Length: 533
Image (cartoon, rainbow, N blue to C red; front, side):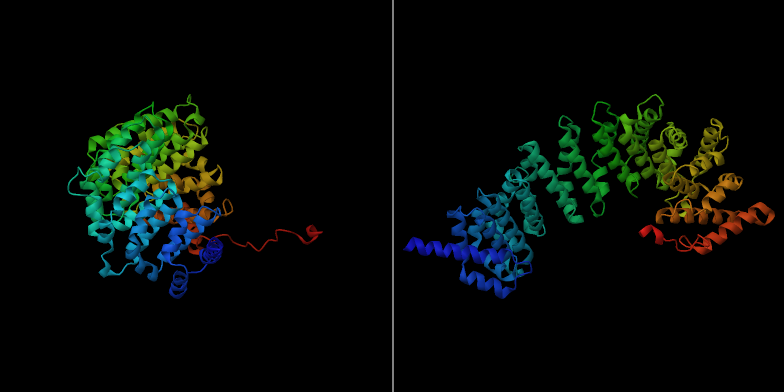
């Protein structure tokens, strides 16, 4: 009879817990208290420890506990049941450990200030158990434990536990990573990247702990390309963190030199070289990048990239073999050239890197390479920079001009205007890239004259029927604005009838705006009446 009553109690618990767990809205404090009064937490935990049937019992009850402890009432009960949370973190069940980790997070976020939640958890040995979940749990357990540790790091007590003064402590992340497997190290490094992102103060602690050194040293070990690629991804996440001096912290750790060596390592997998290029492309445009990297390192990098782009430009090379890598290389150059200092470096570099860029930008035999190179040339010429930063110093400008004329003279187009016109006669995506190049370069008097010398270029730029997409209309409009601005600034308009006509056409387009530039265009039905039948 007693067993029968217990069975009825379990059935009642399962039925009520199912309704509670599957409730889509947020439970009120009153409903949570009512549920806990009816089924005390020790009872739920006891059932979790002793029962395995039915199969969905564990998921339902752990979900109930998560929802209970996510409320203020539930959080107030946590200190009373910390022993059970410890048991949950040690459980064989993945669901039990996830629930325990989430409870720790909820307690840290929602506990009253006078509770001293971080210290209370540390006194019960919670942090080492969270580390064990991080290292030995499945991906879901690991993610839940990372979130809990991040919440713990929000307090001085938590930071002191995560980064103890004594670096020989077994729980110090450096030691956890050192004695772990490759998967464990990646998980620790992932945690470090997230800790770095919390604030400038935590980023400084991570920097002083030399954990960034461990991560960067791991990049050098390219035996496991999957691990190395993952580490590169984590470094990219660290860069993306909106932390003051974050990029500076990375660049001070010889990261730039290591990335350069990966890019130049022909035995490394293409995917690793691509990822390294992308990270460099993100790092260099930063304002403080050029103060953290010495000039010789940057020149060395440009020399390596020049070798890669030279290989891609080689007409004997198989384009499909390097399809992704060559786009990454030109994309990286585009990112570098987007800054004033980066554009200067590229145009003053002794390596033939800019010759590769300009040659490829107007080589119609390799369309993917050409498109990537065109966008790179657009950035380098100044399309992404403010108007007052588009013109570079005398040497750089002279080099750009000479390269454009040399490239044109070696083709049937003969002049830079011929090169630009050939791009505008290609498909819409090439027109878009061509607009960007013209917008960036037209502020230079020689380029302005080249553009105005070919009526076809002006007609192509103002012809809004070529590309009616939003992006295409905006790009052609900005191009018209740039040409008009250059013309009015030149002072030669009133002395030349042809320039006056061009100015009037451009002024009309600019006054109408990017979306109203098409004249006399009425609504056109997509399906005629007769076609419906």
